[in-house]
Image (cartoon, rainbow, N blue to C red; front, side, top):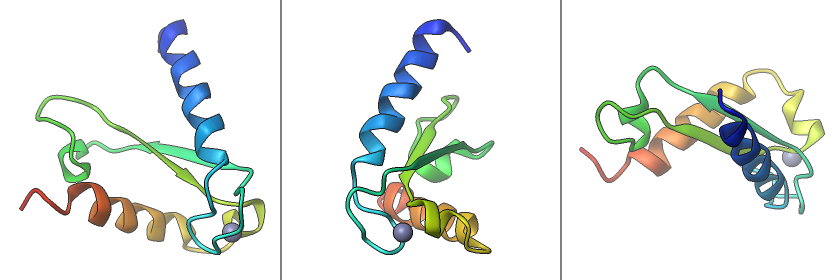
Length: 84
Ligand SMILES: [Zn+2]
């Protein structure tokens, strides 16, 4: 990853952490995560493009078992929903 991209990712994580927790809704979530997918199109990326998916999740909710699977299906629904 280039320096410029690293900075963009950092900025995006900081902004994301200010949003309500995806799971419990506490504000701000104060923590954020990111994932990429080999099937970026599933998350609304144009063909041939990667997509970074950022999500706010508070420290408590991050520890819950299975929470990342929930985040992935939520992101798929929200970002990929209009492309059937
Ligand atoms: Zn939470």
